[in-house]
Length: 147
Image 1: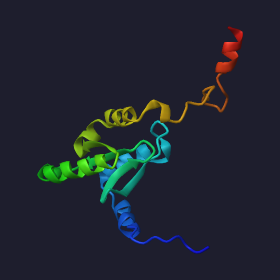
Image 2: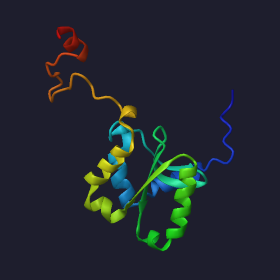
Image 3: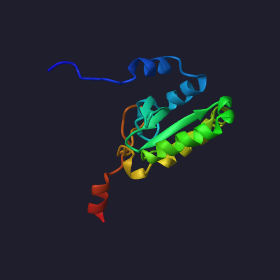
Image 4: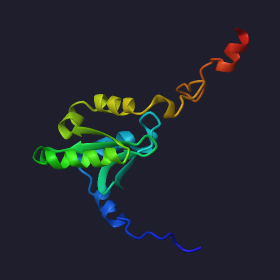
């Protein structure tokens, strides 16, 4: 079988956007990549509904957009864009760049809260301790057997 047929995929354009990310996109990406936030898998600069979105968790249908000062002049465009993304089944959360830098923890909490808890990666049980050992807790099954 040959290479996958990729007609119309914006690979070069998206690669350029990723390689030339804004400072704010890089700051948020460091927190999202590798399932670092609540086990959610995010991708960046993905095409959805004819638009390029900053970050997307496809499993949760959740889009994160970062807005700089240029967005204050493009309110109508951003609203139409959000409607198109929502029509495609996605939830869109927007953050101003300065809000992200002044309150990264709050932004991360909002993003994690936007995803249903049942879809997140489970917490390992028992919880690992700092030296590689595990906390001496019984598993949930063992606890129910003793009761």
